[in-house]
Image (tube, rainbow, N blue to C red; front, side, top):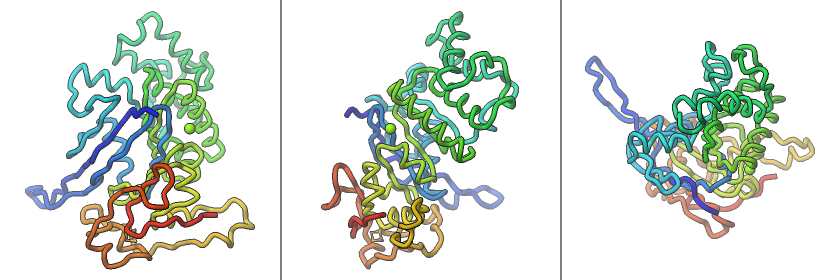
Length: 332
Ligand code: SF4
Ligand code: MG
């Protein structure tokens, strides 16, 4: 299938300032060489513990942050080289849905104005006299009552507010939506409805999603492929069923072993891998393989030589893993 977005060696370092003179004393390596492709119409899940760089990745892909180095090709166009109207055009095609439906909507604006705001920023997409009607259509599209166009965010539930955020996200007919923890602030019962809505819209509108989340079950449900991040790098990436049923990277194996098993009779069959030690500081990642300070399989080479993210002999499809000793481990 066709590639819509391609990131190559994305790096984002934040300076750490200290002292009265705010001197730079180091860098937080939030992204430290991230490369991947996103295909048209697919969902790529991005998982990892907090601080692994997944939210920075989302913001950098949106160009809410400029990368320290690296490139993103969006539909063949080098994104960070675009300025002015060319960049504005790109911004139509790539949208974001934020985590928190409580704070991401302006409480003083009606939903009609919130969803219609993108049309003010990009006035040539929908003619002025058609915009009200288009907002009503968008409200119906996300399962809200078009008659509620003049209500304010506080008059809606959390799930409904996230629907408003999604309506705004799809208003300009984007090709890609970056979803940054879109359901983690919602009640579990509401999460499934919002995820189902997003899947339906994907199908209907041909959207590709980068779905950033820490909930591995939600990511499994929605994703076609999954990328696992650790300390600013992708350590494993592949088809959802490959990653979840035969992970080859010890970090992925540990993450998955901690997911609750729905069927209690299987509980004893799943051996939980307990990681020792804290996540090291992204200002000072370990040498060689960044995971070696917590990895139960680590050998000498792991602290000296960085493993590349490549296909492994047992890998199926495009399943890639960054481990010198990658081997599939069945997860029940
Ligand atoms: Fe563990 Fe070594 Fe593989 Fe890193 S390269 S995940 S330390 S076995
Ligand atoms: Mg899908």
